[in-house]
Length: 301
Image (cartoon, rainbow, N blue to C red; front, side):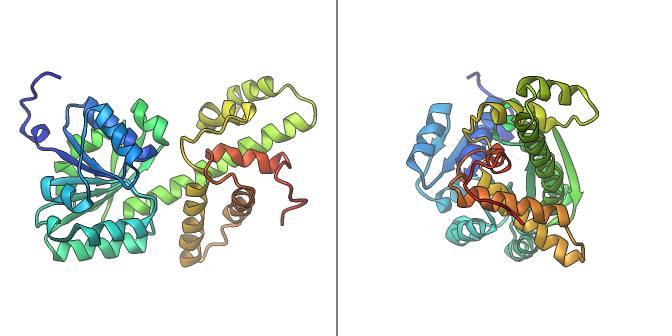
């Protein structure tokens, strides 16, 4: 790689969590010319980062110690809290934490306040798009937190996503992610049920998908998940259990707002049946197996 004269890119970007999404972030950042220093509990994920051209260290504290800007890509707000606690003295004043985790907005707001008291800047920079879409550079980034910090991290955020939005104060990025995931998940579930019905009544599956993609019923879920559903090819771009976690957070948010959330409640039931059938680690398109009646449960509420 040619020498990079941009002083911001000469400083390593920390990356804690190197799974599906974290690995995609690493690929985008390295392609953009950043040095990436990461860690993960899974040694295989660390090996993958090294193959991409990044470097690894043993602990989250080591990442914080060597990097002024650190991206988190973790399963939930619980793991985020654990990583912040493990940061210890490495989590210095003036470090900027860019948290891409889809978590509980209340926890996000509380963490932002806690870190602010320590002189640490926190941005909840949630992602609309799966790991494949991040790698392709077509994801959307929704960022809550201080406007000046948002602007200062624009180089990282634009390397990760095609479009970047500042959504408001801390916690608003997490809220926006849950709203977008509500609609995205229901689009995916509607597609799965439509394909299941088309197959059950004798329509050609490929023609059914093609017609829907050209009709007013179109959603991007058809492009991203349609063929995976038709071929029952469920290698994960985004795991089903992760989306079930998001739907539970969506329902909690709706309850706090006094909304009935009828469609999301039905969606949760489908996802829970899929998880009970052992499909949780598969791609979230695997919910079609429930709607095809292939999970062994006779009926759903």
